[in-house]
Amino acid sequence: MNKKIKNICCIGAGYVGGPTMAVIAHKCIEITVNVVDSNKARIDAWNDNDLRKLPIYEPGLDKIISKTRNKNLFFSTNVEMNISKADLIFISVNTPTKTKGLGAGKASDLKWVELCTRQVAKFATGHTIIVEKSTLPVRTAKVIQEILFKAQDESSNTHNSKTFDVLSNPEFLAEGSAVHDLLEPDRVLIGGEDLEPIKILSGIYEHWIPKEKILQTNLWSSELAKLVANAFLAQRISSINSISALCENTGADIYQVSKAIGLDTRIGEKFLKAGPGFGGSCFKKDILNLVYLSEYFGLPEVSRYWEEVIKINEWQRKRIYRLIVKNLFGTISGKKIGILGFSFKADTNDTRESSAIQISIDLLNEGANLIIYDPKVSKQQVEFALGLESNENNDSIKNPSLEQCAYTSNIYDVFKSSDCVVIMTEWKAFSEINWDKAARDMRHPAWVFDSRGVANKKQVIESGLNFWQIGIG
Ligand code: NAD
Ligand code: UDX
Image (cartoon, rainbow, N blue to C red):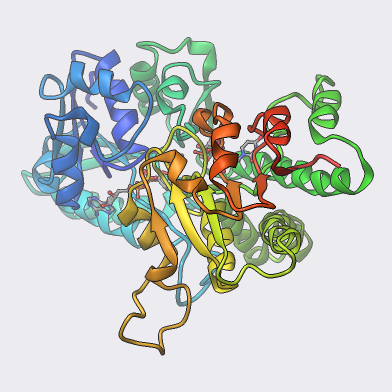
């Protein structure tokens, strides 16, 4: 077995593969790291000389890329060649929820994982450690092993013999703080059957992470722990969001309640921020996966328990949309509404599952005209996420239509003639808005709906605007 890892290949140059490999290359200068992806446009963007054009926005990532790219970090579409050279391969491809077939709407679609495992089985040479980096249903490693061990057996009597070890090493980074999370993780989790490959992978992380933070488990605990971690985090958000509604009805203040309970060290202060509902590519997908697994293993009570976390999330979005309509005299048809923030959280350009999408669609379907501003999300991304189509020459196209939705790169355009603005993302700039200037441009009586609790309440009210903030009675 190769004791020293000299060449790593990561399949999937996305939100996980890109930053994770950049940090490994940065911390392990003696290792060559090749990140491969079948999406040429994405690889071209990773190779762009203009670091502002990297395909994902993460604070601090550009600096690490500039230090490592084309030194020991390479981005390429040549999947086969880089698989064949690698001592260790990270599988970091997408695992979205299945849209059709068995388990549609809940189970993870493992099409991409299986496809790249077959590529690995075909092109790997010598001994290769395969590491599941993607978030996967429990026992996926078994599928990967079956495919790889078949190739191993078939090659055993040839001069091209190949052998494999399979490990699980889920990623816990959060978008917007990925670089920090990778440099200083709470823990690194490695699941496996044999000590030797676990030690080798651990050796890579030990370049910068203290050994006591590297946790070793069996394969199935590692796979399941990742799903459970996300489910517990999402559950806290649904819990606090459910209480935000109760606060609004009773005169209690969600920030005071969060603080009071968070100071109990058994509860802890993190992930108690009420908002418009959790977004992002992971929480909903991973809970649905847990729901599916529980059903599959004949545990309907467990499955229903976790499903409620998603239901409260969807209810919170609808609740916000309804209260906007209610406060604008029950009708928003033809009214102009400004949307501040479209990404699912601050410090990322990712809009996957962003609550801004569902709330915007509901407002558009009610006949409102929207003007959207986000510092990192492009016009094309917004139009794609909302599924906007022009109905200029085709009246049969159902709402929402392209004509109802404008986009601006100037934050103060959002206020011009608007009946209300809705803060959807907690971008720092939204806590620094000049509300006097904003109020002068709006159509009165005008509203500010702050679903993130970032606006300066005193200034908003003093500028003559009506104000609703999440979780405040
Ligand atoms: P992503 O969609 O941003 O990136 C995945 C990439 O894999 C895509 O660019 C796609 O083109 C590529 N790909 C798919 N199949 C391929 C193949 N056979 N050959 C070459 N390239 C291929 O996804 P992501 O957000 O990076 O997530 C990847 C995995 O990590 C998922 O399982 C996700 O649940 C998990 N995860 C994501 C996050 C996050 O914050 N986004 C955090 C932790 C874990
Ligand atoms: C999450 C997990 O945190 C991370 O460990 C995992 O690897 C991937 O999934 P991510 O989705 O990138 O990370 O961001 P996160 O910070 O968890 O936020 C998810 C959503 O919850 C966002 O929409 C965010 O605004 C929301 N949120 C978070 C709240 O509404 N309140 C909070 O207190 C925290």
